[in-house]
Length: 366
Ligand code: SF4
Image (tube, rainbow, N blue to C red; front, side, top):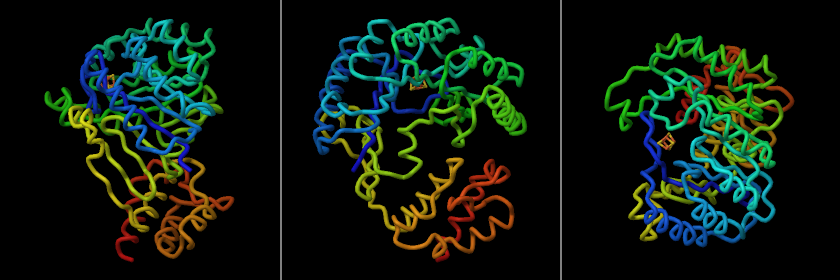
């Protein structure tokens, strides 16, 4: 049974310089049509109770109190037994009234789009918030009982130094966070950075920043449980569904679902979405696709993949298709098997793309 639901809210108050997500500037009429289409799309799926719901974007907190209430009402019939209910929030758009709505409907986790605590870097990214907004958002959430707070940090920005990045990390840990996601900047061709041909920091600096972050996080008691994610004890239950390659449903423009052996991609075109043409692509996943994607997602997680789960799911041992490559990668010291789990070693983890490339080679040869 599908236990995870992703809801994409494609509205933002301002467009960030690096952004290539599915988003448009907020407008009340567009939001009204969106909410009505979203309700209809949700009704195309069976009415089940989800264990995790993740409202992402875009900027869900850019919705007004009334719009947010409508969204939560749409989701109310399927969120009665939700365990982890996350909403992405941009610090500048959070208000006490919105926190009250979130609380009322059971939202118990917030992913706060912080990116950096450095004012110059925030400006460069065209983010709308300042450092004080981040602290204010924490002060609105924590006393009102939303204490499971994740923040995003970004590294590799043009002109970012190791010192400014370290400063952001220390500032982050002054906040009562439970989880942290770390991303390197990607210059997307369709973003403002891409159009301006902005250059990020060198590969060497980027690597230095990544390893420095891991070291500092460790000092604060945060361990890496996934390639980009860190926590002391509260991994993202919702994202675990993706990494464990279990079914999930994504609704809203640009959302993706893994559902009944299909990958369903929703249209990114708002007007098409409003007309009820929700899906732009439906791909039937072969057994081979699923085996490889199971590995690709599972190896991102530090604990790796359960060999027993692989066997139960695909009715054959992992060695049938990947035995040779796995042996080679174990000999190279990049993979290991521990407690019936296949996982990347400390030295293999940063080379995950190469490891996956070698596994893919064997699949395509079989
Ligand atoms: S980065 Fe986030 S907040 Fe900024 S424009 Fe993109 S979706 Fe909106």
